[in-house]
Amino acid sequence: MLELTLTSGVTGVIAKAAEKAAPQEACGLLLGRGACISEVRETVNVADEPERHFEIDPVALIAAHKDARAGGPQIIGYFHSHPKGPALPSATDSAMAAPDGRVWAIVGESGDIGWFISGSDGFTAISPRIDASSG
Image (cartoon, rainbow, N blue to C red; front, side):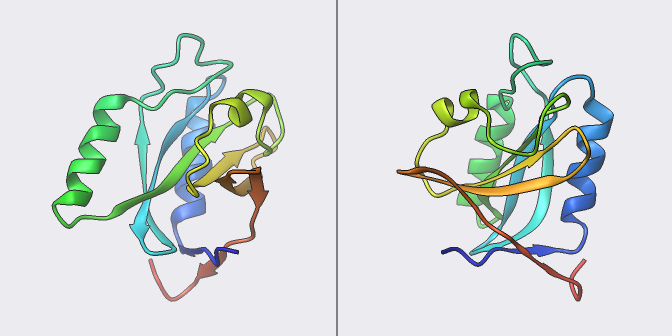
């Protein structure tokens, strides 16, 4: 099981992005090194129905991959919000997720954040550790 670590500001950035985007779904990238997420990069939700679905802007995704190849932070996973639902993967999330071991953070309507790994057996819930010494 992945032992995920978050730097101290990560959850706040994700929560603010979700609040700001409502009633649309927020989305973005979770960046860092190894199993430590140290940066959240908000992206435009380019989905046809952003109130019900999310799609990360491909331009932002390509830019993040280029940054990673140049020695920058790696894409560890993705985040999005469910403005009218729980902090759990939806049927659409499950159908669309690649079983690639990436981290998914999902913000529910109450502001809680669920953390998951996308694998060959679907999503597995995880409990990340927050590194209070980082920022």
